[in-house]
Length: 115
Image (tube, rainbow, N blue to C red; front, side, top):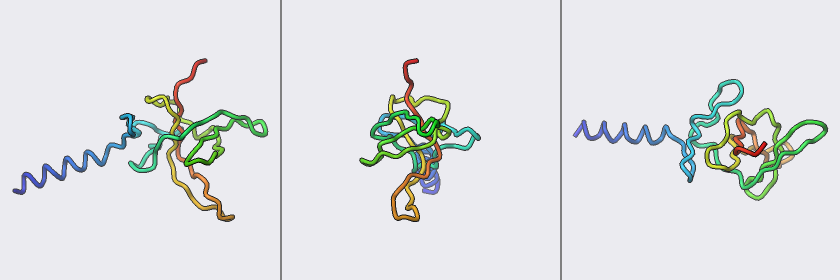
């Protein structure tokens, strides 16, 4: 009985340690520019769409998240491409002092693009 319970706990722990999206992309392998993992197993997901923009001379990425476009500094983009062909963001949504929802990104993962 104890062996079976231990086996079930180990299987559950390994499943919880992996954070994969609906297309099987494992977020666990992505790290930001400081080497910090992008994901804590719950905070990464695909964006609905994305576009590169320049605002006041700064490279930015606009991500469509839950029907709203958010502008995120390009320094959050990781070096590795998304393996499933979509843009992704890792972080959480927070409320600003003005009461607006805004992303607090850890990482942005972009799909490969033609040069």
